Amino acid sequence: MSAYSAEQFQSETPQLYPRLRRAVTAYLAGSDVDPDDILQETFLKAIRNLDGFRGQAGIYSWLYSIARNLCIDEFRKQQNRSMITSVPVEEFELASDQFADEAEREEILILRKAIAVLPVMFRDVVIMKAIEQMSYEEIADITGVNIQTLKNRMFRARKMLAESLKKMGVDEP
Amino acid sequence: MTNRFEHKPEREELERLINDAVDGLLSSAEIKALESELANHPDLQKDYHTLIAMPNPANAFSDDSDTFRDDRRIRHIQAMVRDEYEANQPLEELTFLLLKRYALAVSLVIFGAISITNIIFSLEQDSSEEIPLNEIFYNVNADDPGEYLIYLDQWMMED
Image: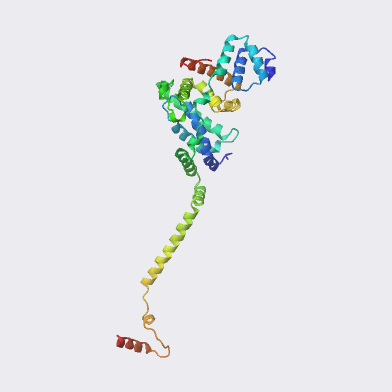
C-alpha cells in the first residue's frame, strides 16, 4: 500500500511540476533533450510505481530521483555523441522579456553555460544543492553518496564553475 | 560546531568547511576560525575568496512557478496520471471509479433509456392492438342493445 494516493499525486502535480521542470532544465542544459519529454516520462513512471513509494523521503525527492535517473539514461545514450555541450552560449534558450537588463541576461547565459559544461557527477550536486536547495541529507538519500563526499564534490564543482566563469570573461572580484 | 577546529583540520576537511561557509552553514565564530586556519593554506584561501564572491548558480534558473499556473502541460500530465492510474485498476475498482466520476451522466442515461423504452412499448401496444368495435360504437343505454344504431342513423341524417 502506498503512502501516497493517486488522487493526492494528481492534485499536487501543479506544485511539483514547475519545481521539477526547473531542475530537469538545469540538468539538461546544453543537451538536445527536451525537458518536457523527461518530465512526462517521470510522472508516468511515478504513477506506475506509486505503490513503491513508502514516504520516507518526500514525494518531491522521490520524483526527483526518477527524473534524475532518466536524465542519466539520456546522457548515457548520448555519450557517443559527446555529452560535453557544444551549444554556443547565445543558443541557450532565454526569453528576453524576463530580464531587467542585458547584463543580467548575459550573466544568466554564462552561468547556464558554466553549469552545462560541468561533468555530470558535479552538475548533479550543484543542481540539487545550489538550485534545488536540498539538504546534504536529502542529496545523500537520492544519490547514495555519503555527506562528506558530497561536500567535497560540491567544493570541486564550485571551483570548476569559478574557473569556467573566469574563462568566459566573468571577472574575479 | 567550533570544535571542528580543535584539531588541525585536514585539507579535505577545510574544503568541506569552505563549502559550508559558501552555503551559509557556519556561524561567525566558525568563519573567523576558518579564515585564520586558511592563512596557513594560501591556495585554499584564494579558493575561499573566489567561491564566496561567485554568483549563485541558482540565479541561472529562476523559479518561474507562476508562469505554470493553469498551464496546459500540467493539465496534460494530470490527465495522463489519471488515465494511467485507471488503466491499471482491477475491473471492480475501475467500474466503481468510472461510476463515481460519471454518476450523474450514468443516471441520466439510465433514466433516458427507461423513458424511451416505455414510450416505444406504449406506442407498439397502441398500434398493434385492434380497438374493439364496441369501444367505438358503444351502447349509450346498456338496457337497450340497439340504441347505438339509432345514434348512427341520427348522425348520418345530420350529415
